[in-house]
Image 1 (cartoon, rainbow, N blue to C red):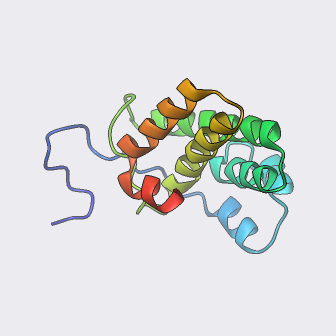
Image 2: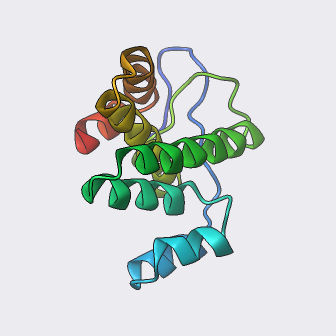
Length: 137
């Protein structure tokens, strides 16, 4: 059985196209700020900025970065045929930027007391990719 085969009759998994530039720059130690400036549509760069800001206590900054990455990811998903629901598999590496941004948005929303947004984003993450929800915590 293929890893992305849908046996439940729902929408097929959305697999974002690979954009290795941001991923390779970040893996090579480039500043996430520089990567986001060079690749402003990269959810991965914005998710990394959100994680870095959160780690240093910049919760509101993290929220803003995560929201940007989340919206950039929604744009990419829609271009990829996503209709507002359905699997966005963690196993497909190009999807990870969006999923990380969604997780970061939930985390920051919780930290600033946005309970409804935290719950909505957490459920959206789990519905999109149970594995991402487990991996990201």
